Image (cartoon, rainbow, N blue to C red; front, side, top):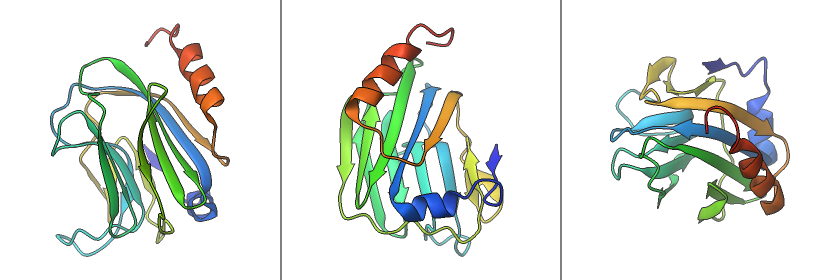
Length: 168
């Protein structure tokens, strides 16, 4: 699914450095599986201009987040278990926090601005210069984008309210 940068002003949202992105997901993938991503640069050159959230190919079950050209974090989350999980990636000024199932699993400090040179962000795949890559292998539900960094009580309520849904 393409999230058009003309329909949703994601570049402005990312530039604000005050946002939250959440998604329920289920996967058993042991290869790279992108939840959300955009990337631009020369083919074959790993220069990211945007952001990427994925289940890692290097350490199956880890959550991997890449921001800008050189900042990334890979955290052990053991999510490749074919069970439902709730991921929140929260940006507040220059700090990015990653929660899985209400648990803070990673923090990235002093993050750079998330540039986006007009490349649309894809949900369920990586948009690499207009080519869909590393599709998400599994199921995504309730993708949420907020223009505020959510807090722990919000994350806990969101998770607990989702447990009774048909897909959890």
